[in-house]
Image (tube, rainbow, N blue to C red; front, side, top):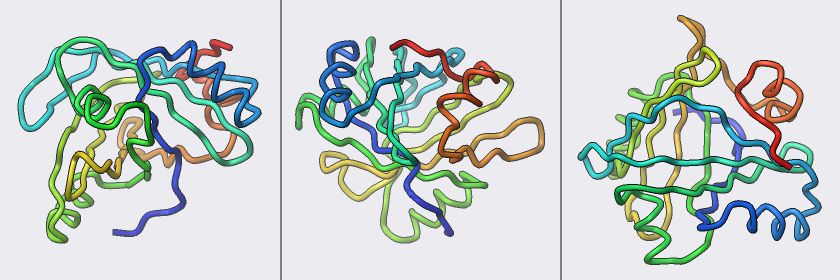
Length: 173
């Protein structure tokens, strides 16, 4: 599997508003954006879960931080928070073929902990969290597709200017 640079790091939080303020001060992030997404078709440990996941992005230069706040049935984020508290949960990479990337990871001894699909501004997004031990964090693989075309999604200003224009992200701070 060929991957590019890390797109973002994900941090599980219980209060995104407070976390945006704290991480904003710590890293000098002045603008935060919420991902605008449709209903989440989410499976954790192979079972369908009824939950919501709010994702907030901020960053400087090409480095992005994702703050993850979740509500509803247990999922990878709630389990991680119970076991580790607020901490880096994953490193995210974009892939062109999620199924092929997952198979390659499984061939290396990794498991899929959680996977989901959702729509955002005309794009279908599929992701999977893979790794060897769920408690120690995961690698997030994301495939984004608009029609039959793949969108890489790692343009440094994707979250800001382009994301707002396409409707994928709404500025919240």
